Image (tube, rainbow over the protein chains, first blue to last red):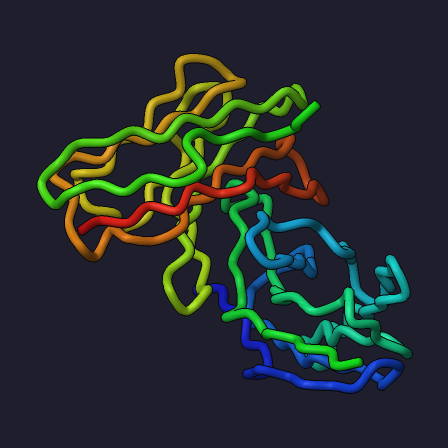
Length: 113
Length: 113
């Protein structure tokens, strides 16, 4: 079945450091790919998405590119802030399966000032 | 004006009790979901309804019964609660079709003692 693998955390960075969180997926067909973020005590919010190969999703300084050849969707940010501390989830959906989200295990990001 | 709202936010109950969690969305979406987040933050789909019809029913114990009285509401009833049911339950909604994002509620933290 479909699956998503993302790097284990926690990831601890200093403010203004460069962030990469790796995400790879296994799925047949052409899934849509998402990054969701969960701030402490809150629900999930969509951070960015990409729906076809070579698409780049971007939002709030975060970027991820849909790479079909490597089945990857790595999340990057050039300069993190303390307010970026949260749990980040990579996920995929396929319309054939009712658009249910298949999530990675989540990566905790801690940014120190 | 909250897009996806769940009640209650916290629920503490004893083993063996029956409890319900309610969810409402005002986004006009036709599909609603229940996800379970365990203590390690892992998220997994439980159920999905499209236009009041059950379309996804993952391997969830029969003690869990979703009900969708209309497109805007999806409730979750749990019978004979067990310690292992302790988790955060998230309701979400989306519009069917490709490339759609899901909107999540704030979650209900269920603690079974």
